[in-house]
Length: 192
Image (cartoon, rainbow, N blue to C red; front, top):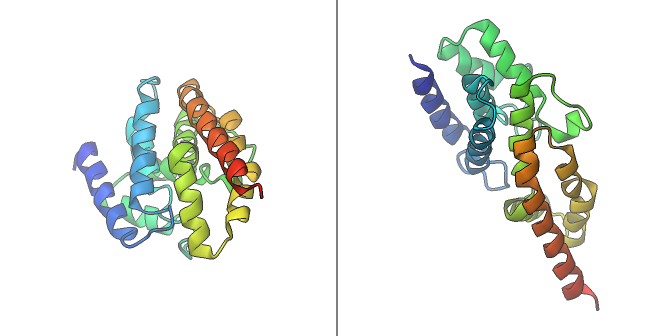
């Protein structure tokens, strides 16, 4: 099977895996991370696009908030079924394990591939889509609006300065400004 066929199968796999998820961590999020990664990769032709593509597509396949798996079991099962070599599968899982903000705060992935996928995921947490995802997740877990707004200050407004690649930093600036404008309007509308 060709690399492009495996990537297509990964798209199918995540659509099945996340069917019915509406908390901001579904297949739509995964696809945005994948497209963010592809956009960032344009500036880094030396990066392994196959590893980046699969890591971006599978980055939430074993997310601890969504699944009770160990050692990237869902991702590894998929990669094994696709006959991806064990070395390549290990590299993909290493990249995946460097994505989570809560588990990797302040850590820069050692590889360019890891930096690109981490940036791609973090870009989907900011800007208009980040605002929408924050409130979708807050609604799912019963978090009141003021606690969701606090999440911007605890995490989302920090992400612009934690991007690894110049390509992601450029995208993050605009999205960061949009969040600040939203928060300013929110404050105005809620000051009673």
